[in-house]
Image 1 (tube, rainbow, N blue to C red):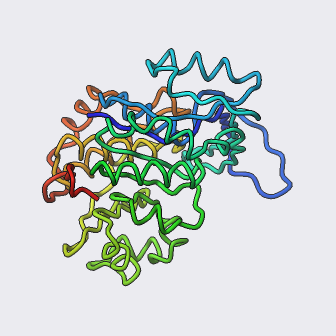
Image 2: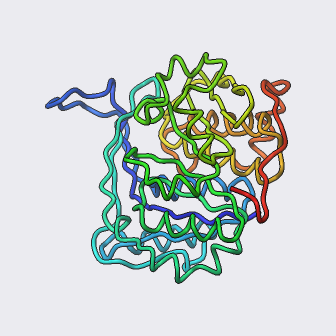
Image 3: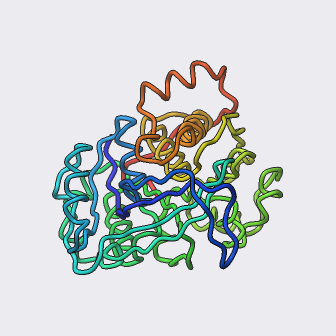
Length: 325
């Protein structure tokens, strides 16, 4: 199994605070952590920890953080060919994390925004060698659009996590196989309130329109309410959340998406894939910071063995080949 990620890299700083701050307020923090991050990097790293081969493109800036990026990729076993030098600063972000593990954050994407369609075209053979192409919205539309078009031409499935949310480019959406959003993003897309999506027995008209437009899977993560998946012509499939004592939810959505695509690439039924994805998300909340929290395949299996039988069931896994969408 091999995934090609249109990626983003961010020096991720996290501060533990007694509660999330209000506008204009200064709070004392109880812990600080700076580590490699970014949604694209988290997605790639979480998939790699699960045994998925990873390739991709990540823009790196020309600043004091550039050596940190290069040493991080060497540390985790990613080839330096995944890095594309661009002018500007390397991405950086700050998150505040409260005692319940909830967070708010801000990210300055810097050089990540300089990644281009030309960068992707230069790696077209590497894109075609993957089994799935994935992206988040910490990368610009142009390289995502190019990579997804190349994937479709090669008969490869694609996964899009449009976070942080912005307008969905119709060309990107047309070449998206799996769309993964959280409850806030689903509401922003007009798919319905998170509370309603958690209980609905049929797709809303907006969800039905997306599925009619070519999506194979729309997956909505709903925090403690679990996740729900929508497929063309089938009822929604729900996966309850695993009860865990969350320490930090930063990276949980990236872990969920990585677990989902790893399971689907391994031909797991969608219900089993949702369960594995939910477990990955739960495990990623178990410690402060994200880099060390993403589970290995062995840790995931041990967690699932102790969690009891599957809580959801479904149809065959991800289709690949010339007709894959």
